[in-house]
Length: 100
Image (cartoon, rainbow, N blue to C red; front, side, top):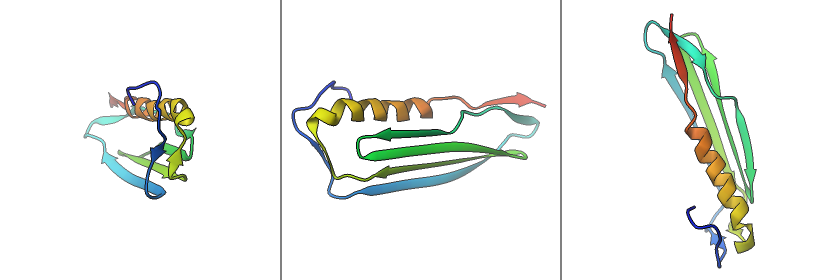
């Protein structure tokens, strides 16, 4: 995603859906202080959703990325680039714990 524009379209052979759920057990003696708010991002031909769900002594994370198109026109690339950069920024947000 480094270049600001493209001369040719982006192409994939098929539409795609990736989803995952992860459970994290918090360390003994700690509790959740902060987790990022849920996010829903839309880009050309795709949608990304992610959320944290706190539970007693644990934290669940779920995300889903759906690509509905197999081709994105070159002129749509700047929007696609911004969308993918927003996805990356979400994954860089910190989860903060505090000692009980």
